[in-house]
Image 1 (spheres, rainbow, N blue to C red):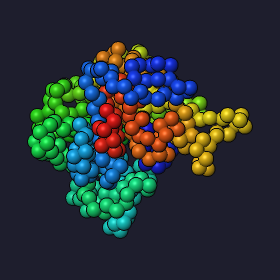
Image 2: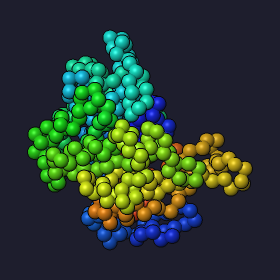
Image 3: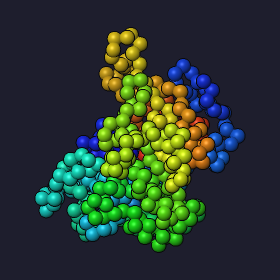
Image 4: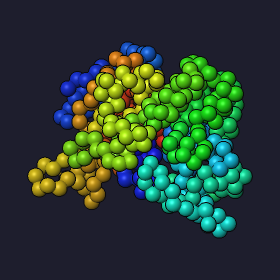
Amino acid sequence: MLAERMTPPFAKRGLVCAGLLTLGLGLIPSTAPLAQAPTLDGQRPLVIAHRGASGYLPEHTLEAYSLAIDLGADFIEPDLVATKDGVLIARHEPMLSGTTDVAEHPEFAARRLTRKIDGVDVTDWFATDFTLAEIRQLRAKQAMAERDQSKNGTFLIPTFAQVIDLAKQKSAAAGRPIGVYPETKHPTFHQDVGLKLEDRLLELINAAGWTEPSSPVIVQSFETSSLKYLRSRTRVRLVQLIDADDVDKDGNIVLKPPLDRPYDFTATNDPRTFKDLVTKAGLAEIKTYADGIGPWKRYIVSARLVDANGDGAPDDLNGDGKIDERDRVLLPPSSLIKDAHAAGLVVHTWTFRNEPRRLVSDFKDDPNLEYKLFYGLGCDGVFSDFPDWAVKAR
């Protein structure tokens, strides 16, 4: 998601509603409880474990998903890519080096190739060049260097079928429904190499008995054609993801290829961008094939850098010698949640992380304040690397 969903070279990267008070340019959540959640259906927002409990364990592993469920997540999120023999596995990207130990396997050295992903040349090892049997020789690793690396090389790469089985087993044990929230990753790329994702996904969720809007599954994609194809063949809930490249110093959304539009738009010469999808007209169109949107959180509440002395350089607000999220201040929220709810769409936003450098200065290094802000604005769900924090805050 956003730059977070890509490996290099993609990576970079007033009173508004009950319970929120405007202070200066930032928003400070009130501690007063809301009489009813301002979500579309009035129910409490979903906590979606982003790639599992990926803040604690290597992402997209059965262990990370299992921990996320134990920490209270309502849904676990497997990103789906295909192996050479057509098996869906849970990986953040078709590229393997960022999240597995493939580079440490000399027997696979010759598999390092250059392929085009969303129009960009990427050199890596690709899941589409490995059979499932070969994938099983790899082990997962923590993708973010600042996080615990002690479990690297320990966990296997799971299939989507295994993720479904885990959710069902944990649901029975916990006595509560555990949902699965898969993403079709780079559908155009997979279709071009003869490994179309959607029919494989449908086969597995249908076998699980998940065929209705009430089923514990939500399917997401950045590409509209993937979702439209799925809508023609299933009634389960679908969510259109909304990306961007970054925000500028003033907090304006920056669109830059390949993160400027759904790649199927690029492939079909459709001039629209992600910004077009969040207009009222864009939301109305999304409603014709999906049940919700998954926008990057800066579309909902953005943040700007500060240049109080006017020297043209951003101020280091916390004096740590670095410029990051801690040196930004919140801007007033956009109308996106209100507009999406008016169109009958839920809003599931991403990604919530605990590291202080990822928290805008208004939150004072406290992740709870960020969750409470977005919950108070009416978000219907949040994707979190630390699902226990998201559960505690709601």
